[in-house]
Length: 127
Image (cartoon, rainbow, N blue to C red; front, top):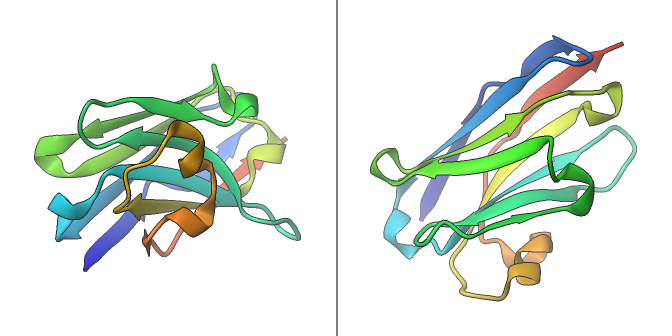
């Protein structure tokens, strides 16, 4: 089993930045890729970004490129999501997820391809 714990969410004004963290524990050696998803009120959960644990290849939803950056610290088994130029439409619960399967980049856009999920952290952007 793998446990994921997100942190770093909160309230920020439009134009501001936040950095989310996701600490993984347990059988982390089974993880191929870590991802971030978000779910806004009344909407489906959507893919934000993903990163391969080894090699560091990154994948982004098109709408997030340029504002969001995913990174990892293998020694700390932690994944980060740096979010800049935040807007009210970025308000959502952000979830960290881990996949045990090796796939192509777009494989990780789908939440069903992840095996473990964190509890989520709320990000609220005020206008």
